Amino acid sequence: MGYVAVKGGTLAIEQSIRRLKYERVKKGKVLEVESIECGMRGLIDQVMSESSLYSETLAAIAVKQAEGNPEEAVFLMRAYRSTLSRKHYSRTVHSGEMRVERRISASFKDIPGGQILGATTDFIHRLIDFELMNETEEEAKRWLTAFEREAVEYEADHTDLNRLPKVSDYLRAEGLIAECDNDDQEPDDVTRTSLKFPASRSERLQVLTRGQTGAVTAFAYAVIRGYGQLHPTVGELRVGDLPVCIDDPVGPSDPDDAYYIGDVKATEVEMLIPVTVEKEHGMKEIEFDIGYGICFGQNETKAIAMGILDNSLSAKNPEFPSQNQEFVLYHIDSVEATGFVSHLKMPHYVTFQSKLDSVRKTRKSTTEKQEVGSP
Image 1 (spheres, rainbow, N blue to C red):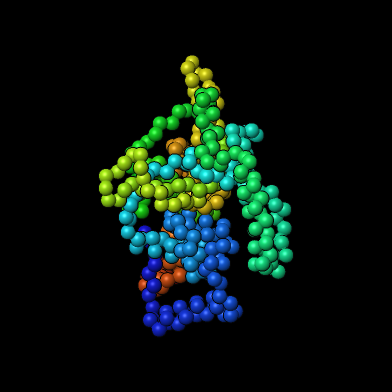
Image 2 (image 1 turned 90 degrees about the vertical axis):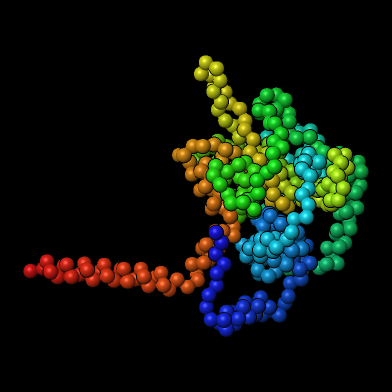
């Protein structure tokens, strides 16, 4: 369901919309869409992920229109997405082909291809940089030129960042992770068919990657605080560009040939979750399950949380709400949650008056009975 209904006097609504624009421009400054796209990378990535629409420019326009409110921006993006026709379906994207710009493992110090820190806030001091108040574009361009020169020289002498091996492959080789067969079934699409329970894994992953970042993170935090999961570890986290290809839209498809249409930046995580497995003769051993997370942009906390919930929702312990598919998947959607809560601001005159009448009748009846029973 989605609550968007607005009722009331037409003139009042028109003036309310005018006032909304006034609040956005009243200080006499207008944010350029390009500036938002270039300088609010984290917000852009979040909005694209939650709206399941990859377009940095559209996300920047939505952020501007929503005055930086991510829930409203996601609502705008999803509404626009629903008007788009689907002309092609891409070939399956293999994350092993990602051109990596950041790749770490919290499970192993040394991994094939090496740890690549890339861009991250993990090691900054979280102190406000007041020098940004006087930052100029000229200074930024000079710094950028020097940085890019160093980057080109570095990449020429170091590891190829394409097709880096997966950490999980080495654990499978040791028998510490169960083999995983490829599932070539066509995935379910929750944007076209209603979510049903029990949800398929493709449905769960789609809802999780579209989920509100804060809600997904909160549920995952609850899981690792004791609601159904031992302490998970990041087996591998990678951020980079994934190539997207489509088959010939006119002629017959050729398995050895496809049209490359561009890249999407994504964050992918494989979480290692310890589980106790019962073997022969009642013996128990510790093995590792995989929890998978992937989302648009550099959205690391959400991808990790998604991996935790992916594994948690595969279990079926009614003791933990974090393992209840309906409880989790229905309550993490940004548009659904925001829409339902926001609709409470809309007129509810009839229903509330009905409740008031019931309360008044009940009180009157109670008062009359007390008066009759009094000496």
